[in-house]
Length: 88
Image 1: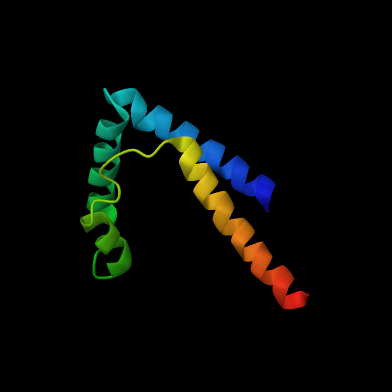
Image 2: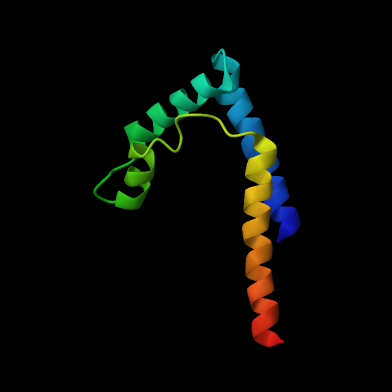
């Protein structure tokens, strides 16, 4: 699970760099391009929670990739901890 998470994160970061960062002057500008793309494809009636996240500005600025990796890793390990405690 962990190796899959890390592999997927690295692949996603490579896609973001190739498709958004390469066409933008700054990471924040790249994120604005990304959120513009999301706005064009997300149906707010079908996905109201995602629409709320977009509208809240969560994607309006870039987060450092290392922080994104650590956040996701922490959530995975939190889940593993819950499983271990339940089985303990």
